[in-house]
Length: 325
Image 1: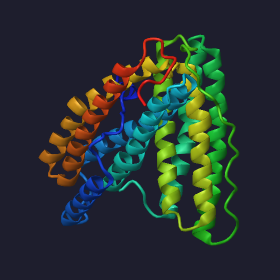
Image 2: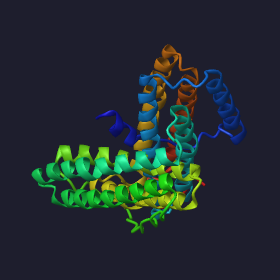
Image 3: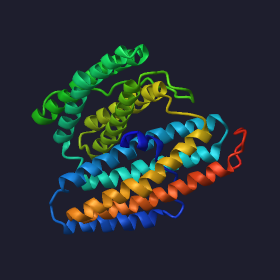
Image 4: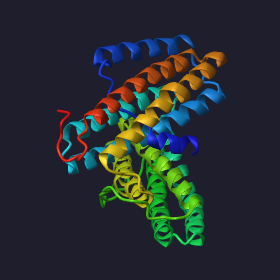
């Protein structure tokens, strides 16, 4: 299992000890440390670790939303609430702090250029390659979906390119955001057989999740309301269509008991292995703010694992009623 597959098992429940004031104090300290470090960017390895972390946190956000929806289908309201609160921590706190330290977002033109480049790569290279591999493995449904998503990403790339032209020239109109056709993801087994197809779906889901989180961040930073709407619209397609379709194909969602078990394993990996390793590397490189953030997130994830374990321990054997409220 690669590190991204491991992260698909991770992500966690809200740490009960993490209050808003406590997080605010941490964020302020991290910002002060970043300021004291001047304008120097993180070292290359630290930046790589920040990107890995952001991809994981973005994936966690979307996976946990799907797990929450499954818990609600099973009548497990408190567990669903736990997954949803956790998703907000992963995306609204961890991802955003890591994005700030890595200087992920730039000005409007820079963000549009980045989005166009990413969508072009997926349109021309990544998804066509995944489609060929899936078809060769006999996974026709996945191949067809990869081909459809490739076409979508081509449309997205063109829209971002046109928006960039408008921003740079000051003339023309920013394209309207795309329409969203939501996909429901109930619990179910994988619909693909090939090992490479499953690996490609994992890569694709992490890419879609990262794009969703980036575009939401870019929308928040946009000065032009039309550009913000375009980023938000594309983000929703990435989450509610592309990610959801891929999650359905790979069988990401199981019953709530299985989803909790995966979350516990993942959170323990992050708290015990991934974040401590990243913290040590960042400290050795002199990236103090990143090291502190990684250590903070490791503690969060340990708390998330404990919260998920408590929810699993309280889950009735039949899973039919919510005894955790």
